[in-house]
Image (cartoon, rainbow, N blue to C red; front, side):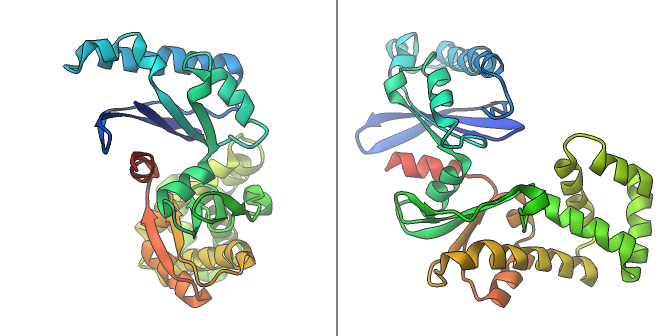
Length: 298
């Protein structure tokens, strides 16, 4: 049996797979828990999420399932291969996460990887390619079909994260307050959100999670994407992503695959940016889980 986790800051998606025959894998349970991030959460918080949310879900399934009860009671945990993919699972944090997960599952059967590896495996499977994450932030890697062999540093939304929602929000705020062409858009945005310039300054410079606030502007932009100024702003953001993050791989022959809400909801603008920068688009999906199920079922 295999338990796959895809974890972000807000939520973690879990999928339990069972192989009744050597060449067949069935999805037998899916559920969500709180997000798990070893950089931002203490060991106690993570242990509580796993102990109270994950194990209770598996226990509930065990009691309700019509499958072989011998398979699904206490021995269930001892039979699991756990593949945990998560934001914050940097090389420094991987041993930390393995140790915590090893308190609940057989330690020798627990493997921990970054969310970037989740993207690479889900998008490229066992083929070479360029895998990208475009959500609130942005990241990318060159993948050889087995390992990540190169990664342009993302650097966060202040120093980098071109293509992501927070950077789009930063570009949007700059444009509506400094570019006279955006005056009508500014008035519409402030009227719809009931925000003032002072409110925005406060949220960006004085309140926590400024990146998340900036990324919320994407909702307004997507609802008014027919406006050429906003469309060009999105395309410009994506072009910067290709220039700063993808060109350094020197692999224009490889398809560029994407995962995440920014790529998924702005596919037309992403395709336009890719064409302008001379890159071939590959897959664009919202979440890696389906691809990870395929990867681990082979």
